[in-house]
Length: 163
Image (cartoon, rainbow, N blue to C red):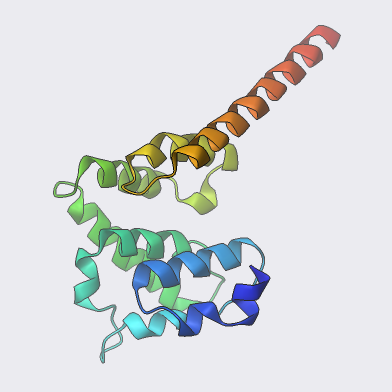
C-alpha cells in the first residue's frame, strides 16, 4: 500500500474508473489520504460525471464503494454517490445475475458500512463466479473463515459455561 501511495499509482498509471476507484478505496481504507481530485478526469466540461460511465457496471460499483469513504466537504464524492446510485439502481433489471447480486448487496450495505466478517462471508460465496478466480485462493479464504468461525464458537461456549 505504501509503495502505491508514495509512487502515485492512482494518479498516473490508470485511466479506467474501476481501477482508480478501487485503489482510492483501498488506500483510504488503510488510512492513506488520497485526494478525491483523481475522479475529475471522469467529469465532462460541465462538471458532471460523463454519461459514458453509465454503462460500466464494474466501474460504477467501484466508484460507489470508494465514494463511501468520503470526508466532509468532498463534493465530488457526494456527487459520485448520487450518480452511481441512480445508474446502478436503473441497471438492476438488465444485468447478469452475478453482477446483480454484487450490485444489490452493495446498494443495501456498502463495504464501508458492513462488518468485515460478513463482507468476507459474502465475497467467498461470490468469488467462484468471477471469470478469473483462483481456486487455491478461494480454498484458503474459506478455510481461514471457517477456522475463525470455529474459534469464535469455542469462545462463546466457554463464556456460556462460565456465566
